[in-house]
Amino acid sequence: MSKGERTARGAAAAALLAVAAAGCAGTADGGGTVNGGDVPPASVEQRADTLTRQALDAIRPATGTAGVPAGEGAWRKCTTETPGRHRFQYTYTVRLTVPGERTQAVLDAARAHFGKEGYQTDLPDPQNPRAGARDPHSSWWVAVGSTKGTASMFVTADSGCVFTTHDPQTGGD
Image 1 (cartoon, rainbow, N blue to C red):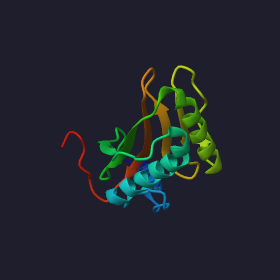
Image 2 (image 1 turned 180 degrees about the horizontal axis):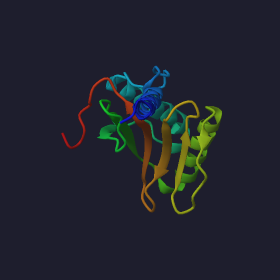
Image 3 (image 1 turned 135 degrees about the vertical axis):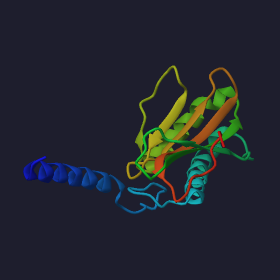
């Protein structure tokens, strides 16, 4: 291999490392997402709880329910990885029983809440009774929806894939 070929390969390797490092550099944005890691799983879980509680507070008048049951959270490993760094996605869901005739009012209240918060709302889908929105400053997605034909509704917050300080326990652990 000539000196020129070694120099070219070295430059290509350096460029690849720079691209990889750029994708991993950064700090937490305060919203539970990162541009490079070091977010404790507990802070992601807390952010999910906060987002669902905010949505629940916003829809409470429309639900006609006073109490809110505990939610369920789950971690799963993201399919796209960076060597030496693991990304995980956290989803937290609270299920509610809401009379079917209140579903539309609940979805309208959720959309109003998302608009007030400055979220980017999902387009309505008549086949899927749900109001969803993304926080434009992070990877978080929040939704309020119902299981068609039932009195079961949900409020969910999804972190998107984030680099965590350590591997959280997933459903397969």
